[in-house]
Length: 313
Image 1: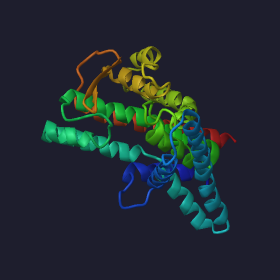
Image 2: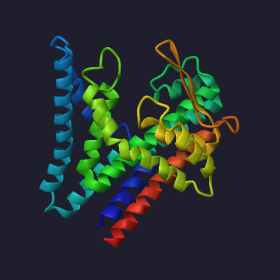
Image 3: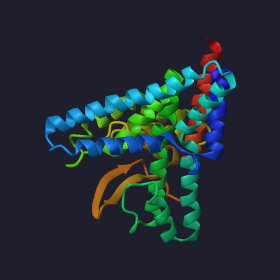
Image 4: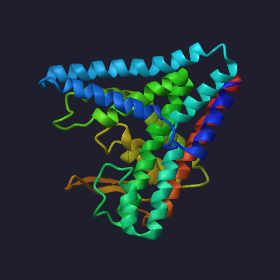
């Protein structure tokens, strides 16, 4: 079976089924490992050098492990053709997150039809900010921002590394992303331990985040406002502290002609992060569906480009 067909099957499975909670998932195993490592490190007295060095060792060890385990599994099963194909496709499918992102966004969309309180509760499962006092517009914005940002690091980046390095590359990237989400905070608790995990994540996402934005723009030709999308992307893509997280958000905001960002509340503290986009119209609930569609179209375009290139080799 060709690699192209394997990727097509994996993408279809992800879009149809997402990540069923009943199935074991590698990211949960990665999270458990990172928690275990953090507990060990915190038994020692914190020092700038010690904790930064520990963070570097954790990152290098985990990245190597995440690459070598799937590599070993596929190598061991290479003489068992159908088992090998099944395992490779299954791991590809688990690495992708477009299906789950779409399902979670749809849950918020449906909750908004019931009540604002229900929507606040639902969006709390996919964002790290306080949701208790969110307005309907803020709920919609938070959902769109989550879909847009994760379209890069949950969909395009994993595909990028799988296209280059196969399933081991995809798992390696998922470990990098998971470490950043658990350790990569710029606060007193994690500024040292999470220093290298955060920097490594920035490096790994440097190309995919920008590629995701460009794919969004290209896949939206004749569908959304690509001229405005390009304008906002160029203007606003560095408005976040992270060099990568605003790339796909700015493209999405521009394509939809809406304004994202603004007021956010974290643990009771209000933060105004500035706005992204040009407000050509008011935001509405259907923008959630539009953001998901932009994500899926960019994924399909990327897959199509890969298949085309493979056909030439």
